[in-house]
Image 1 (cartoon, helix red, strand yellow):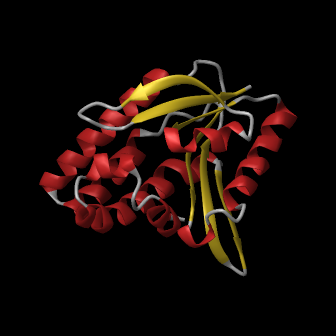
Image 2 (image 1 turned 180 degrees about the horizontal axis):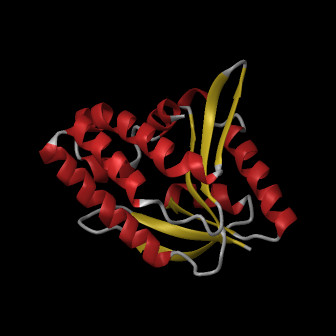
Length: 188
């Protein structure tokens, strides 16, 4: 899952803002993403993968309603893994930007219980083939069955994509320090 997401977000403006240079991102992001998936997402029951012939081509990391909090021990282990892969100076920069990202997006989150799509990524070789749409439709069918809304943040370039799945922009979320603007999107 981490490898797919690293490839999917290699040129993502948020990742560029968070990591600084491409060399640092390519060195640190794979281990960071693997630690985040293992320690922050798998135990919550919202991870989805899609692929063919045993090859993962797309990943969706959802946070179910009521499962937003991550235990402190999980955060500490993830932080230690990031420190080991980044080194102290770069760890500080990445952690500072990560904290800014989390605080800024968390402030914009709707208060109503909802499924939160934290990450949706498709391997570049499979983009445009329907992998991301299949992952979305799968979870959104569950949302409809249970009467649960869904929420996500995305860049302007992805707004129309998510609108096709019933999401509507409800907020603009500018990231600090020259970061890109995200759009909060809600699907009742």
